[in-house]
Length: 439
Ligand SMILES: Nc1nc2c(c(=O)[nH]1)N[C@H]1C(S)=C(S)[C@@H](COP(=O)(O)O)O[C@H]1N2
Ligand SMILES: [Mo]
Image (cartoon, rainbow, N blue to C red; front, side, top):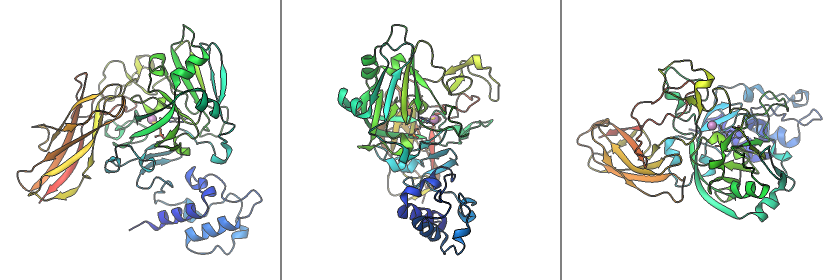
């Protein structure tokens, strides 16, 4: 049965989409007009959510959100992201259950969301006046482009590219690592349309001493302090100049949704998704490793040499994460199903391997004793995940686990146990497991 709280929020969104941002952005935006009283629509909408009228509505102080909405243990849902599991609501972070990642191209409503700050307010974004500045000490001709200029002056490309948060799988590390406790769902493979970063950088002149690029976005620091940068990461020139590294304005054929960086974002497929800057305003070409927010210290870094679980690693012994490791998920069936023994069970999912291709996928129903090869499709383009499928038979009734393991073209295989403990809990690529009851 649907949680009435959640249903209410959908109704509110449907009735007054303009005001739904106060639910989305950490319930902190004022649902009441600046004049200090409720608008007719927001009053009606709020009453609908609460299931009754608010007789003293006029006395409600501006900025007050009914406690029945704001103070609840029930999880909120993000409008347009139903079914995702919310890990935090300020900032918004939500992951996709594995069985909802079954599509070849991850639909927008099933694409995980990872925000480090507060997205810019939709009403303040005008695509007609939005600009992207290319600058930095290693840029010969710093230039500011409008969105229209970018679309017209450079060739448009569409690629399917996987984005995975470097912290995906963090919840399994022991001792635990702070941060969003992602299980397996901070991954998606969208179809992105935009222009090559390479062509834009080349048009602005790349000096011979260039080593890195860095991005800046228009999101707002959680403190509200406009001088603080939420996140400003980047990639080495070699990754920046790859054909598939895009400045994108569309996802799955639609304008980027606000949560995914509207109107412009970077996409660096196969690398930590933290390099894929959203609400993109500025790119700098650097003559050194970019030193923006979340580039230094322990952020998005793992120990340069393996350490024992729980070790405190000094900053200088931490290395920046580049290509993501080989990984796979089972997207069908859903964990926990009951299956009839007389029927073979068709299973499927995706596999990906950072900058590389996946060469083989294996499945097991006996805790990794015997591995059966799965059928594996090539990627639709470089850096897109690959579909695998297999059929399993079960010797007798009972509890089974299905495990999946991918091997990349470099010969790297997924480990069965959580690998390489690291202080921030990045890069867990252990085999995905689901449970099946055979009757
Ligand atoms: N401007 C900006 N870009 C950002 C972030 C952010 O907080 N602000 N988060 C990064 C991180 S850590 C990830 S994992 C991806 C998530 O992209 P998504 O929300 O579209 O799935 O965006 C990256 N780009
Ligand atoms: Mo991330």
